[in-house]
Length: 309
Image 1 (cartoon, rainbow, N blue to C red):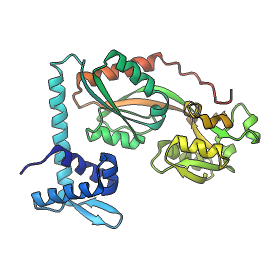
Image 2 (cartoon, rainbow, N blue to C red):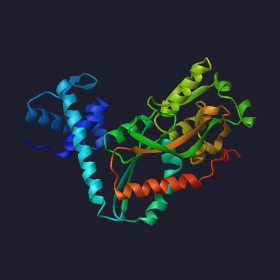
Image 3 (cartoon, rainbow, N blue to C red):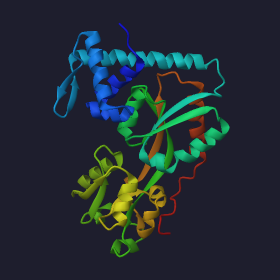
Image 4 (cartoon, one colour):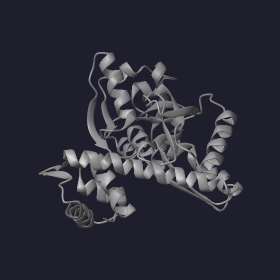
């Protein structure tokens, strides 16, 4: 019985996403190719690994067992890579980073550029995910390093250090009375139509939790996938959006809006760099972790200027 790593990686993706189509999107292959690989694997094993439903799939008991063993295989491969890297000096190789959107849009690009200058033969692969997805990528061995919103609970096998502090601002039209203020409380936005991010965003979850604790529900008129879309919708007059200040500053459409900082304590979020503690790391990964740690120590965590200043 023979297994190839591509099929096993697809198996993990289908299991995590509970969807052949979503797994295909993640792995950048056709849904029909994902379906064929899973069907061929089931035929080879002689067992059904997934139940097929109208809106997705779920693992059978045999599928659950297969996933456990597949994760062990990837752990062994990661350990092998780490052991072999001891014979290198970290001058070549690959580092896989999964990161929260705030880090991708604001901070990581500069750090990756400076890392590439120091180690031009190290390939850095960056993927943008929600904090929950980042942790799952670490646990599955798909990523070496993660950057998450620090309020997300970490499993025991993952350690982290503070990377940046992220100030949230409300992007308002200039004619809104709140736009003339130096700062506002989140509660003051309770009657505004909000442009939010899709379910799964850690920022959206944070805003919903904050609204609930203050006794109101967000009036989400529109939900989008990216910060750029949220800023564009707000600039078009379709509602108010809340984003990290440096994210707002990076989009030209934000120039038509006024960024007002939220003074709620939770609106100054920490971003954290994390990695699996039990997993051996390659020399390249250790170099990147050290690079990000030095960057974090050097970065001033004072409030940055808001877009309208």
